[in-house]
Image (cartoon, rainbow, N blue to C red; front, side, top):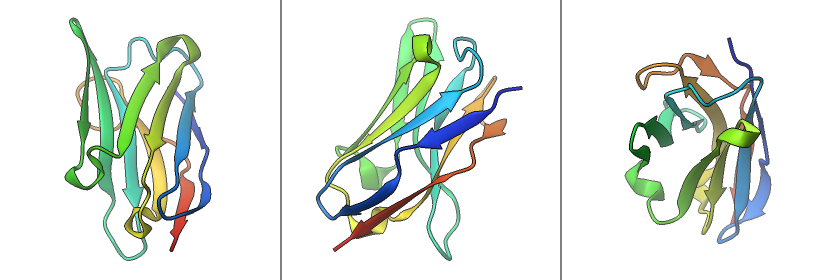
Length: 120
């Protein structure tokens, strides 16, 4: 079991930046994949970014709409995953959920979510 706690959400103007953090209750060294989903009102939850740790290092993936603006990173020493969000747009407004996949890539654990609101 692992508990995930997100922080860093808030209200920001379009073009601004936020950094989300996801702190795990135990070591994430052995967790295969971690990342972020988001869900906007009236829309399905979508995968925003993921980071997968393999033998040769980590690989990252992003949904097309955030490529070049968002960066996911992982600090195993701090048991934390980050999502740096730059050049935010109104359409980035959503609740952002951190997840962890112990093996494979499908989420096994979820955080409680953090609200990101981008104003024009």
